Amino acid sequence: MKKLQYNIYVLFLMVLVGCNPVPEIDNETMLDGDQIFDASIANPEKYLVSAYLPNPTDVEKSKPVIIAAHGYTATTFEWDELREYADSANTFLVSQVLLGGHGTTYTDFKASSWHDWQSSIVEEYIKLSNMGFRNIYMAGSSTGAPLIIQLFKSGFFNDYTKPKGVFLVDPIIVSSNKTLTLVCLLGPVLGYTTVTLDSGEQGKWYVYRPQETLKQLMELIDLTRIDLQKGITLPIGTYMKVYKSAVDETADPVSAVLIYKGVKTATGKNIDVEMIDSRIHVFTRLKGRSGVLGSDVEKQAKTFKDIESKVKTVAN
Image 1 (cartoon, rainbow, N blue to C red):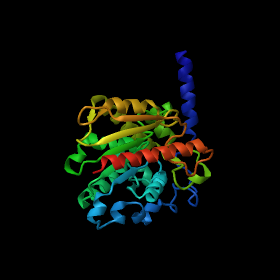
Image 2 (image 1 turned 30 degrees about the vertical axis):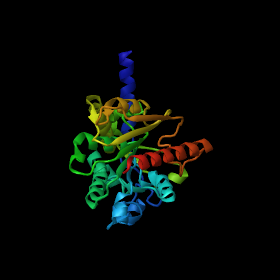
Image 3 (image 1 turned 90 degrees about the vertical axis):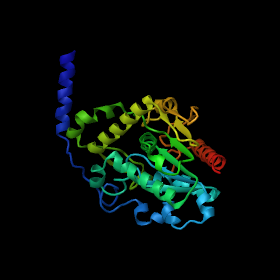
Image 4 (image 1 turned 30 degrees about the horizontal axis):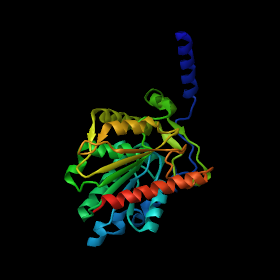
């Protein structure tokens, strides 16, 4: 049996060796190329509150601001619908950060580390804190979640305005794709993996996922899982809630359990977790997706209203 497994493994490697480690990029349609960039790069004032309100009034400084961080291979597009909701509600602001290394070329993405991804979240938070915004919140979808959790673990907020609350949507602490754990072994042979996008997602996500970034993703979620096992305490006055799809082909639902067990408020209480009857990863983003049902729209709206209610309640 062991010899058979070994032969299969060798055969698998031989097949992989025949793969082209350099992807063929269509510059006119793919984010991976050198012609399509995330819109926030050219027009930051439409996405970042720090750019939109460079000289805020005292009233504006008191308005709740949610810094929204998207997931791995995604762009600011992932949080467009929350910003649109906020614009219509006029009760809070949304600052959509583009993760470092994302939104430009495959080459830039390939060279980035998870610390680079996190850097744009840090930069916007520091700007808003130094500008005097008093009610800062954070939202992270998928990989955006462990990037935010790591900020608490590192003690980053010790030197800045403490966040009022954190909202995590389909956080990835454990991957549903178990083959991701083989990336360190097979990565150099594979070079990259690919994903299939819906037509409405073209130019918003990377089609090719360099093995270097997959390693960074594994490093981030493995580290975060270990840190959660050790325990993380939120700053005084910081609220956290996790919204997790019950069926998720990207982020294993156990991720929500690990965060629930690993994070406590400053008073030792548990954080809030809500399991959503959804099969969509990052169910708060429906634009560009095929097969969206009316029930999906209702779940998204309910979550946005819940976030709004928490922001209005916690802010002072």
